[in-house]
Image 1 (cartoon, rainbow, N blue to C red):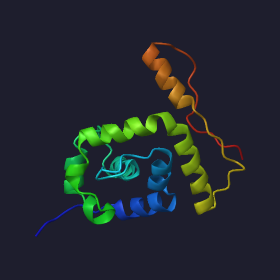
Image 2 (cartoon, rainbow, N blue to C red; image 1 turned 90 degrees about the horizontal axis):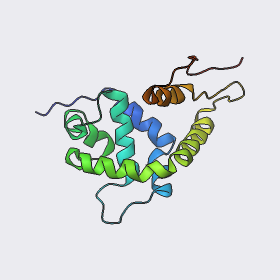
Image 3 (cartoon, rainbow, N blue to C red; image 1 turned 180 degrees about the vertical axis):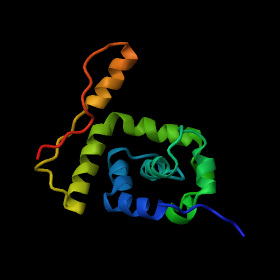
Image 4 (cartoon, rainbow, N blue to C red; image 1 turned 135 degrees about the vertical axis):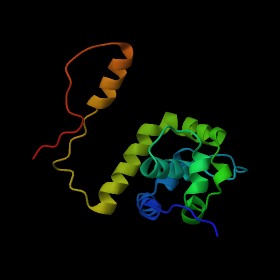
Amino acid sequence: MVEKRLGALPVAADFLRRIDVAGTVDRLCPGRDIAHLTHGQVIEALVANRLTAPAPLWRVDRWAREWAVEEVFGIEAELLNDDRLGRALDAIAPRLTEITDSVGARAIGEFGIDVSTFHWDMTVRHEALSDRAGMEGPRRSAVAAAG
């Protein structure tokens, strides 16, 4: 008998498919025809990894063997090696804004999100960059919503 963790993988897979993460990534960042996985499939698996096992981004293949990744996503664990993850991340880096905009718009439509009171605050990103540069300054909240 083989035991694997299931956790929230089916829920994550359903959400990722409903907002078309793999399709969006594959349209904007097509891979090679000979690849075993598309960039979109790898990114979906990485998102599921972040949601179910938030830890340093390494040994994702081990996580995939211990969790029901093959059963839920149809991806064999050994295909999620560090080199393949790196290629997918390199492929999406130049198109990240387009990907997040497209997926965000899809989520808004798919889930009927009311954006009239939504505010996207990039302070955390700026603070992280400032911290790395050794800069100091006032801290603000990461997300704010107007009511």
